[in-house]
Image 1 (cartoon, rainbow, N blue to C red):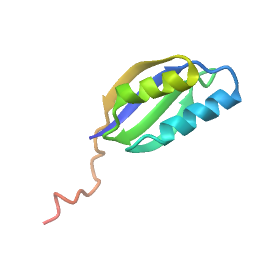
Image 2: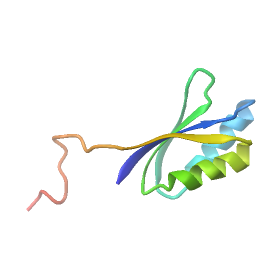
Image 3: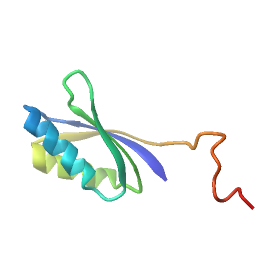
Image 4: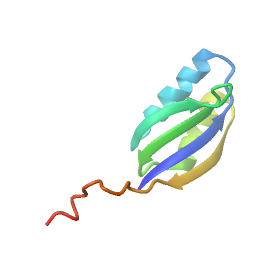
Length: 87
């Protein structure tokens, strides 16, 4: 199940942002990581089978504070060929 996870983190400097990106990218199942928001304090992770609670906990330990904002399932776009439909 492909999902999009949004986690608000506490960042004080560019080094903290870099640490947040590295920590999220090292998690199993992560496909992409980006920083968003006015102060670049929101980590948006796209992945397949990522444990969102443990990711938020790891980020909290590394950065001091992290709160899980949203977790939503990403729908497959129509028109994309899936292996299951080929016959």
